[in-house]
Amino acid sequence: MAGRSVEGRPLWRFDLAGRDPNAPAVLMTALIHGNEVVGSLALHEVIVRLQVSGELARESRRIVVMPIANPDGFAATMDRLGHGLVFGRRRNAAGVDLNRNFPPARPDRASSASPLAGSAWRRSPWFRGPHPLSEPEARAIAEVAGAVRPSLALGFHSFGELLLHPWACDAAVHPRQAQYQALGEAFRRGAPAARFEVRQAARWYRIIGNLDDWLDASFGTLAFTVEVSRPDRQLLHPRGTNPFWWANPFDPRRALEDVAPCVLALLAASRPARGAITAA
Image (cartoon, rainbow, N blue to C red; front, side):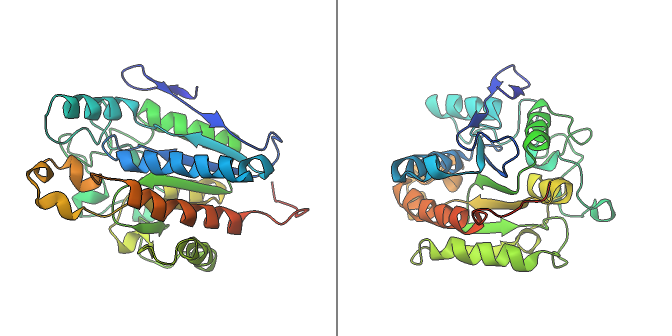
């Protein structure tokens, strides 16, 4: 267990491969937004396929998974759906968007006029919190990252069928753009028929204090957000009036079939060559 949420729920951490504490690490997270359930399903599908294929047993890197990074938001979402209520809880129990609660990666780009970037207004869906790492869930992720210093990170969200990479806080070209783009192309080759696009996150919309930018700036992590699925055509159905279904397809099987081979291809492409020396 990596910690506890605002309401005391456990924040689970699973170490699935690579017992060498000096080996490079891959950090995978999901449900940092409590209503983005399909992202956690996608992460589960990736782990199952790694296990079934035997790749997990052969993986020399540490695979560190935090499958429910916002358990209070997830619990509230499931409770509301179970009672036939609309939407769910994107933020944590204190009303903070956890993906706006990390220290700004570039202090010179730590403000934006867009409310989506992170808001000081407590009622905003994108409330960034009173200060960076104010929330126990964000602190737990940061502590895990500090302990394993991941070389690669994948955060599963929804929706958009996008693979996003830093910077999110700035539209300037990232110094490691070529590396990000190469892994993005490997991701796309995993399922050529899928409709994923690879973008710098700020060219989707700007975010201040997000996890990917912080990992990149703090540890040199190649950090990606996987935006799983697209809005379902069935949103025209009356059930679609519940915004939960905007982020989660009624039938997630197609989305999982598209994203899982892409993620496995990215993992394969990012795997260090056998015998390679990795910087500390």
